[in-house]
Structures are given as structure tokens and as C-alpha cells.
Length: 338
Ligand SMILES: [Zn+2]
Ligand SMILES: [Zn+2]
Image (cartoon, rainbow, N blue to C red):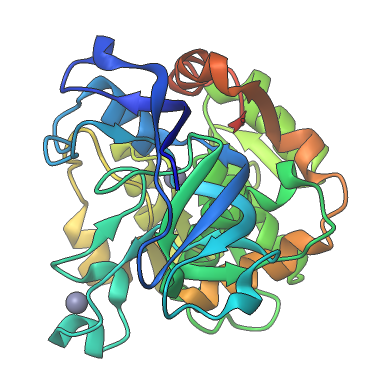
């Protein structure tokens, strides 16, 4: 097969200026891999950190095609992959482990010390085509709009965070701090499950993120919970702020649960005595697993109109602008359309 090239969003080196849309070789699938025609690829905070070369992202391979939140159609399969994958609409699992170590043996493949991240460890979906291991494929609804199904990966992270809350008592009230896509989706999943949920944000979140939450019918407030007399059984902290952590631990009922999904630019002071005296549970949650992708894809398949509130499309040629819009919080979710 002659080698062809096509434009892709490439991080070419450690500096911010090294990221641009340039032509790269389109790689045919090797054994165990499939080639996916990308319909859409979302961008998130991790892409912004990688683009800027922020602390904690020094390990990102360069050059690399950015983008780990994609949906597309399998157009070619490598040796050993069932040909029946061809023509199916899929989302690849973004973070996967080696499936051979003791961590993977517990089922937590996203925590594997040898984990590989699509679009950071190897070429991702900011391109017309991407080649991924077949073992990562999750089949998704073939008919829903691409701008909605492209939300499967971030929705799966929210689904994993919700799962980490454990069983909620009947009539439970849950708060979510931080109305970025993960917090927004966690609140949306909880509300869909009939849970009484309040989503909190800051003044900076008001015009875009809190407004979007309200358009989705969520109870979204600025600052505190609005009704401090109503106790909160559990809390998902998705803001990455010290204030969010302190508010969460100070607001849940004795024995309550706080699940933290955000990553923190600065290490927060955690009010440990509140945690101890309340016998609170403080739980971390990271990325997601195959069953979370299935939950997310199933929810999105019937979420008519969600993409109109959440997704803002940018043609691939304007992908750097999409990164800038993400960094500035001007959009809920920037989506590259090749
Ligand atoms: Zn992401
Ligand atoms: Zn492993």
C-alpha cells in the first residue's frame, strides 16, 4: 500500500508553539490493530496541559497526534482482528493497561504502571484517521449524532466517579462542585438516575458552564448550595480547588462520602479533623473502565439534544483555536471535526 499523508493536530515538541496542524503519514493497521475513520474528536484539560507542556506532562511522547476522545468508524483491520469490526462505529478506550501485571489483574487497568494513553503515549484522534489496538474498541450507537457520541470518553469518566460513590441511601441528596464537562456529566448522570443533585460553580463558570447545566435542566448554583439546611449525603469534587475540597468535607452528613475526580494544580489543604470526626470517606477516582464506557455510550444514545448544549465543533484546521477556547473556558466541550 503506498504511504499517504493527511493533516493532524501534532504536538511536535515540548513547547506550546510546537503544536500545529501538519501533514503526517496515515499508518495502516498492524497485527491486532484497526484503523478508524475519525468522525469527531473532543479536547479536554489534559490536552491543554499537554499542549502547553505543563508540569506533570513531561512524559508525553513527541511528536504525537493529540486527541483521546474520539468516535469513528472502523475502516480497516490488521492481522488477527475479526473482519466483522469493519463498518462498526466505535470509541477507543483512552487509557488501557498491559493486562499482564498485578494491578491489571484487579481489573483496574487504567491504573496499570505500564498504561498507555491514546493521544499522549501514542498517536490519537486529532486527525482524519487513527490506528488503535482492537482490544480498546467499544462499539457505540450507529445513529446518534457524532457530536454527541464523541462525549463517550468524558461521560465514562463521570460514570466511573458516580460508581465510586457506592450505594446511595433512598432519597439521597448529592452535590457536585466544578461544572466542567466531568462535573456536568456526573450531575447529569445522577439526575437521570433520579438522584436529587446540585451542581456548584464560581462566577467564572456562570456564562458558559452553569448556563449549559441549566439548559440541561440541572439545578446549578453559584457559590454555596443555596439551601444549607438540607444535608448532603455525598459529594463529587470536580473543581480542583482547595475551596471545593473544604466545602465538600464540611457539607456531607456524618459517615458521608466525598469522591474526588479533579486533579489539582496546587496541593489543597485538606481539613483532616472534619474527615476524622465525621468518619467521612474520601475516595479518589481516575479515568474509567470498559463498563463505564458502556454506561456512558448507553446514556448518550438516548440523550437527544445534549450535543447542542455541550459540543462546539471546530474544523481540524482550527484545532489550535479549539485548544485555546478550551483553555479559556469559552466552550463546554471543543470538538474537532476532520
Ligand atoms: Zn479527556
Ligand atoms: Zn498492567
